[in-house]
Length: 287
Image 1: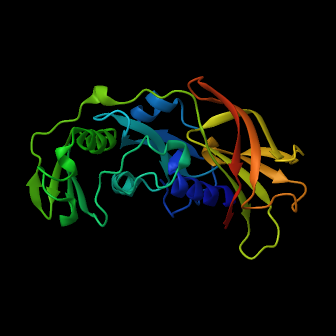
Image 2 (image 1 turned 135 degrees about the vertical axis):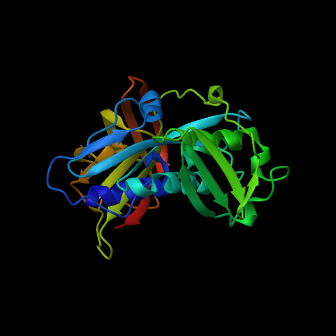
């Protein structure tokens, strides 16, 4: 249960390494993850879960560095009924202040825009946006990267062959189609953030979570203070393999708001290796 809440924190920050439902699994048998074809193509086989049925999919964010192109990110949910709408909301919300991707992902959606409805009928998904989206000539839908992001995100789901757009119930941007060749090919896994976690009201940090931008296997992870003193603790992996969890031995050693040095080596499920060493600010979150 704590690891599921941890994933919620990951996705809210990253957003990343993943969307979530507040509905947690309650079944007793071993869990399973159903992944879309897009997820497997970009991130390899989906990681497992201990219980429940989870769904792995991709959200395509518009690229800021390569106009017209989109960047795939992995997301997860336990709520099958709301996958399409949750994916849209995460896409519109963007990646927030995720420092590892600052300057690489654009945010073309105006503040306050809402998804009023998502309806699927005979292979067509119709998305109805609020008036804040604007029209197809001056709003986000005038951009090919936005059309690519919206359509590719939705077309990966079962039974979807076409995506149509509305604003306040009126059809907009008819005939626009996604360019499937516009997807940026991912390189090595990246470190997203390092966060100290503790129970609400607790005096001491219980664990430190090192988040990555996709499911990975941890090959090496070392955290030291700026004085070079190592931070000791047993290392585990979180649900969906999106983070390394360090169960700290010296709870007083971690001081949120101060820098730490992190050295890591990881491999994602397509065999791409990522490694590095850098100083990061230790964030604090309560759960």
